[in-house]
Length: 487
Image 1 (tube, rainbow, N blue to C red):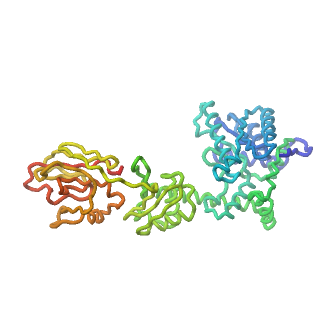
Image 2 (image 1 turned 30 degrees about the vertical axis):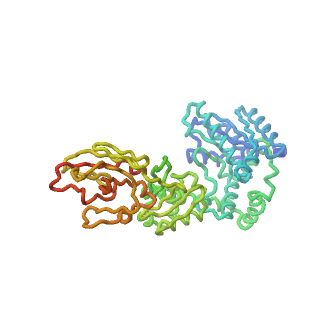
C-alpha cells in the first residue's frame, strides 16, 4: 500500500476542502447523527476517506465534546498491511486520539465461512467496532445506544454500491444503497465526492495510504469504479448526483413500505412457542390475502425475520413461493436454514423442519385432580354446580353420575368413534377433527378424555352427547385444558 501526499500543496482550505467540511456539518446537524457528548469510534483504514473523516472529527468540527477513539483492523491480506496499521497509529498519536489496532486473518475466516473476502472483512470490522463502541460507552458512562461508529463512505461509494446491487438484481430496499444512519453506524461524508475528500487532505498537507487492490478490476467494485462509472458519467456529468436523488427517493419509499408491512406482520401473524420452546410462525391466510402482493411479500419477510433471524438470508425465489403459498390450499415447501412452510386450513405455518409431535402417554385423571400431559399442557377435573357456566372450548362440564370409572387422558386412536353433542349417531373421531380444522400434525397432542372406552371430551373440540349436563344432573365435573398454545 503506497503512501500518497499532497504533492507539495501549501496548507489552507481550497474550495473543495471547504465543501467537504460544509457537507459533513450539514449531514451531522440535520439528522442527529452524532449525539452531543456520546462516544464516537472512527473506523480508519488509512485511506483518503477515513483519514479525512478522522481529521474532521479530531478537529472538533463534527462532534465537539464527544470522546473520540479510532479502530484500525488489519485484515492480514497483504504482506505490507502492518504498514497501514503503523501509519494510522502514528497519525492518531499526532492528533492525540487513542487507537486500537486489531489483527484478524480475514482470508481464513472467509474460506471457513464460505464468504467472499470483501463481505468477510466487513463482518469482521463491524464486529470489532461494536465491541469497541460498547467499551467506550461504558467508560463514558453513556447508554450504549447513544454511541456511534463513524464510517467514511462517500457519495462515490454509494453510487458504486447501487450499481453493484442493480447488476445483481437486488430489490428496492437494497437499491437505496448505503444509508447515512443504520443503527449506531453513521456516515458523515456520504454526501461528499471523493474529489472533495482529497482536496480537503491536500489543503491540510495530510498524506494518506493507497491500496493497490482498489485498482484490481477482477474485483466487482473496482471494475464498477474504473470502468462502469466513467462510462455513465460521460453520458451524464452529474450522474452521481442523479443516482443520489433516485436512491434517496427509493430509500424513503422503502422505509414507508417497510413500516406498513411491519404493522401488517404484527396484526396478521403470530409467533408461538411449541415443543422445547421452538418458535412457530402462524400466518392468518384470510387476512394476509386482503393485501397487495408487494405488501404481502414485505409483511411475510418482516414476520419471518422476527421469528427466525436466519430467514434474512432467504433468496427472492423462496419468498415469492411463500407469497404464492398464502393463497394455496395444500401448500408445502422446504426452505433454507432448516425451515419448512405449509398451509393448514386458514393458516400458513413456518417452523423448523423435522419437528414431529409424539402421541401423549396415557395419564390418569383423578377427580378432583390434574393430568400432566407434557408439551400438551394439562387437563384438570373438579366438581362444580350443574348450572356452573362453561369457559369456552378449553373447558367442558359433564354429568358426574354418567362417568362410570376413572378417567384416562391420551391421544386420538385409530378407529376412535364418539357421539358428538347434539347428534343422534356416532361419528369417526378423525372426521370430527377434520371438521374442526385441527391440523393433522397437531392431532397427536389433542387430548382425549376417556371413561373406559367411551370418549367423554375431545379437548378444545367436542363434548360427548352421553355425558352432557341435563335437567336431571345432580353432580357435575368441570374439565379444563390448560397450556394448549404450547402444543
